[in-house]
Length: 118
Image 1 (cartoon, rainbow, N blue to C red):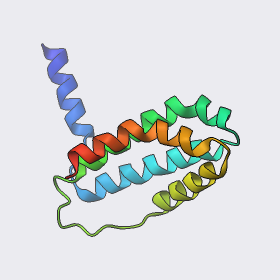
Image 2 (image 1 turned 120 degrees about the vertical axis):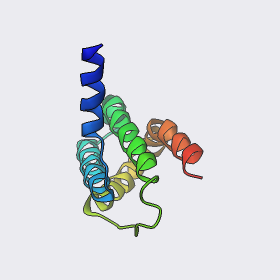
Image 3 (image 1 turned 90 degrees about the vertical axis):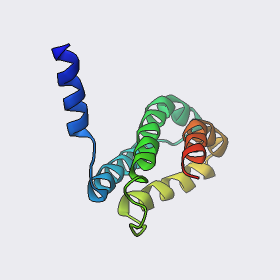
Image 4 (image 1 turned 135 degrees about the vertical axis):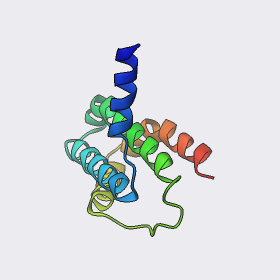
């Protein structure tokens, strides 16, 4: 029981509590995803790193959903991380088969966003 309580306290302590903390964590995840995508030169490369990218996208999605509870009136910002992620996404789309593969990797995260951010 003590172990479970310690785990819950630790998990809650690691959860962002302000919009700035959410933004910093989101920025970090966006940069990490963009860094993974920079390594991709072919569809096969994208398929190989797909699970790693998907895991980070899932974390970013969960963060976005959680942040909406406290960020109702916060201004939306375009950040360096989001710009880098968009740049890499566009590059991936130019690779033969890249668009379809990337969209398949992102599909669950996009569905989750659509269900939760209405």
